[in-house]
Length: 435
Ligand SMILES: Cc1ncc(COP(=O)(O)O)c(C=O)c1O
Image (cartoon, rainbow, N blue to C red; front, side, top):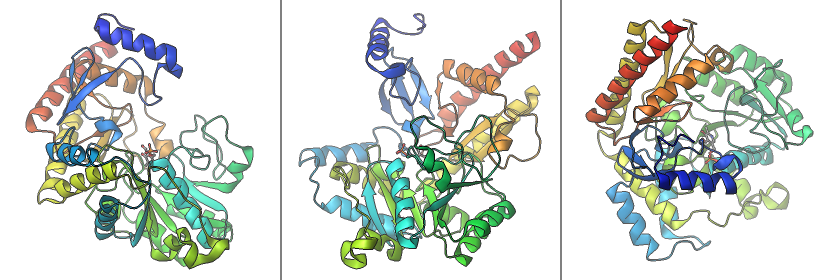
């Protein structure tokens, strides 16, 4: 612990966390940062240090922290009861709003986390097709289930399509149910789909994989390929839903899957996620429609939670107003362009990669476009860690992987961030010249 950086109160919290939490943390971020509060585009730690926040709670806070309209909606609902298990009007209205917004969504089922949404989307596809295998892409993130934690981040990627588990504790048999393909490579994917078509229950993809955009035509070709073979296509829209556009990546890239998972933004900062898709597949959540054999049992204590639903509805209402996405994209574009220019000017080999609401710098000497997980492995991990640390020291909060841009970020936040980048790049340049 750096005692120069932390107040005695924060030091005490960090010490307690180290005693009672494995690795001293909730598992998401290092335990040396304890956030006290957030408002708009800024957060403060327990030592009172202020940050321009590009972590956004790992994405949900797209309209900013403690937005007055979200807070008012939540406060009103808290006084009326916080969870009922039974249907409630706010969850029903949120489902209606999602069905109206998201192209593939004819019906939806609520769960509490994106991990669950992905797990049930894959299960629904299995129930529908009566097949077992799932094709996913190397480097694609679909939460924490046994099936999803395959070839997310293999340190030594093996021969595709063999899956490599990302975690201890996953039954060995699960890897045989997963087929791994390279993102943005339609020929390799088509070969695998043809080879496994009689066993494939679904193809699941992050349409915008981490920070890698799809190459032109890739998603459309994937749509055609899966449709040709009667294999449901699942878009994981936990990150992209209501972020790349109001209708998510499927609206933004113009390709409609059969099913999608949603999370983060739709819960407005509360635990709420969803599986959405074609009524024919969603029917497997309805025993009366599909009978005992086809029925997918799915129950969750907090599903459709009314507090989360009112928060989500308030966020969606704000995002639906004219100009919301233009503002987010304008901020993100300004940030991406200036980071790129600054790194070029400093002669630091790098690519700024992503879409304006979600991007990062990849420190690589490769000048060819980064198209998949293996291309990302050309990045210099030490340089990435150092730049992130320098930026953090200068009051910019982000995850190790990405900058999330919000509607609450202002031109002043952009200026503060640009100054922090200038300073961090200057320091990095000095350190690199010292070798
Ligand atoms: C693309 C994607 N899918 C699924 C998840 C899992 O969501 P959750 O953390 O809510 O379980 C995440 C989380 O970051 C994600 O980025």
